[in-house]
Image (cartoon, rainbow, N blue to C red; front, side, top):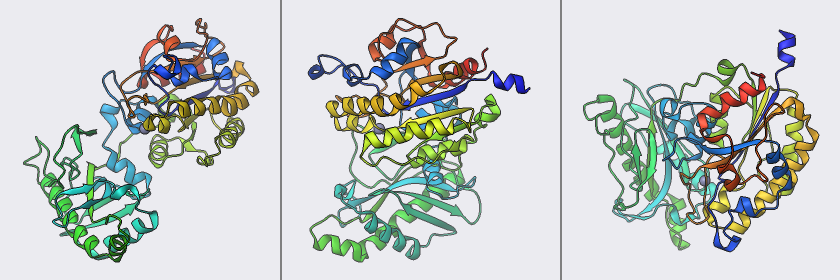
Length: 435
Ligand SMILES: [Zn+2]
């Protein structure tokens, strides 16, 4: 057995959030990745096989959560139970089967409590204000035959868990947030909508479910009663006196009634992963799939420092695990901002400070490396898209392609062709075990 273990290579699974992009005129029709000066990644690509990856499915522009679930080897359609439960769990709230968990945000409604003036409270609600409002909601609102826990997270965002005192609740209810719809458990942004606080009801096919009717009733009751508390709050009176919008309504979406039940990665593949993740939801997924969470500094704005620290911690923690899942947030945000120069710069910083401090210090005979992304965030679209992302897989046992660099264009010609996110982990495990 010991002999067998010795021959297992360590896996370094590196995901660059929102890396994929489309050609940009100002960059000579190159993508930010293609335009970036990134000799370390390119060198690695020259020793690797490359291809294109669709993290969830060909026609899906995924949120990070279902993309990560897929990249870790799970069929998101089978395991995902909605963003609500995942986000509530990630924020430290307990989500038992039959409790209702939602993601929420503070918004500004007209005094009638129906028409929405601003979905994000003018984007200037501070965490202090949101915390004070949450406290008031938790202490002043009571629900019929249920308790609840409301928690603000970042800015105007938050989570809500409603716990029934009697029978279990069902997550199959519609959103009160009119900007988002549901396709099964997947949340989707609506292209057109009436900007009115919606009334939750059981979803089609669940109209007769008492658990869904009760859940919708409780959510509507919460929305109405929290609205009254918010309207009277001194926090909001102060905001109005400062000519700011009041946070006077809670919009909810992505309900679910249980956490996903993943068989752990260790159970499935016999490999214990350590994970480098910075967002709460990704931490939640890491814990639910049985990965250990390695403490890493969250982005401070000094990217060069951050990325070299991550490389250093990666080298150290490789001793402790069979594999590392490293999720680097950087490229996604400039994609959302449409800032292609910034995106190119961040890719260069990751290359210069993360990969440069990592790859040359590895014994390349003893590792399997994958570099890819969770989705594309094209600068032209400023949102996640269904475009595939480049993938490289390195192992000393692999016959390299002739890719000169790590890029969307080269990936398209690679021998890995097109693969789905959920199929990548088994491939890496196979290389790691030398099968
Ligand atoms: Zn994003």
